Image (cartoon, rainbow, N blue to C red):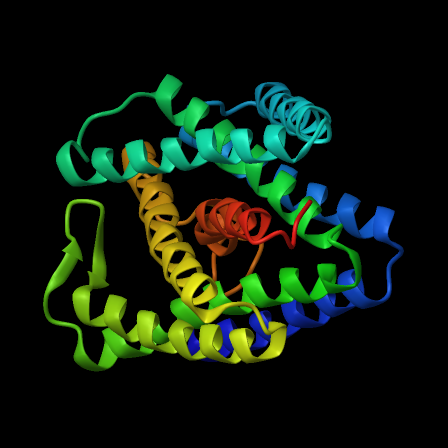
Length: 268
């Protein structure tokens, strides 16, 4: 399984390199949309949508909402940050849900949660990518930040994991794994600060906030999977599961990071 995860991760990295470094900007943004819509197809199962027409309708809904957010966010930086603050509020609600009532929920809430998670992910990626010469570097950085947290948590959890982080939602995740992921992602954040040259007093706390948000995104998808009786969101990616199993953390981390970059004046 580990070798499958490594090989699949390397293939995904190669595809990402082509998308960011080779494709024209318009096609790269379209590729982000394909990724998000593939996640919407899988998320439809959490909402109890089992037929192809029902799933396609849900994918279309996510696409329409994402387009609407893009149009609204294009009216000015204030509109963009307003959208991202609303998205941040949703992730705060998700955190409280995980902490206080992980056993509660229904298919309608699951469907709504998918729209609130996936549409802003595309908006965040598109706005980061469109941030001038730094655009593709910002996208690569936030992907590396979340990947480092995931890899660090995986290996630290396997080696040192004892105390369960959220046993009612994801029994395999531990506090030791969480700390390992935080350390690994922290190293990426320090390197990113040196690369971008942004004020460390603002940039490093932003990275920590994005890392914490990524954990909430991961656990939220695990919550909906558990409620739907699924182990993985799909089987497209050997060793990883489905598309959602790779982008769940990004759903929360990217909007938080984009909001911070807008506050720092990098995204406009």
